Image (cartoon, rainbow, N blue to C red; front, side, top):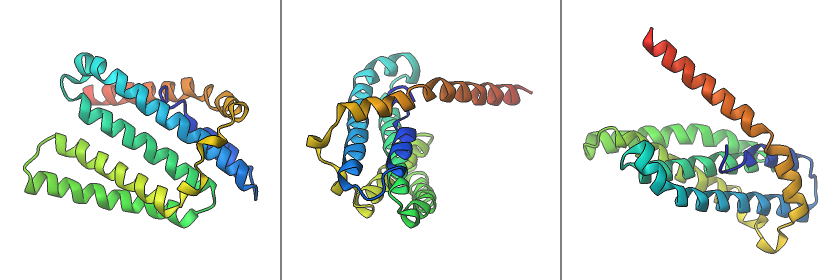
Length: 183
């Protein structure tokens, strides 16, 4: 939520309100992609630090998982907000099938251990992102000349206050898992 500024919530809020104005949709989607790209680049800068502190040499796995998950969520929300409910609904089932399939391949065929789980989730996130991007024809809504700082500021004013809420929910979930695990 910090690096990607909860832009997935802002894109829903702003796109759903736009009816037939293709330029406004393009501005909103392009601004969202700008945040995704900046968050991805900032994450890449932070990987070496986090790799040493938290993930002890597996930072690259976590970086690609983190990025694929963020893009997956945001692209699903864009597709949903643009009214492509069938593609949005299908993406959940497809994600499960891809994750299970990749887990089977990585564990049974390639004899990978724990890294199989993160690789399968990463592969699924990338696949679903590509399906959303091309299946939803999102490329039609990207034009970096359409970046609008005023709209971007409005989007950020909407979503940035949601970051502490998300962090608190994540902390509560983590603490309750730790507590239930120790009982």
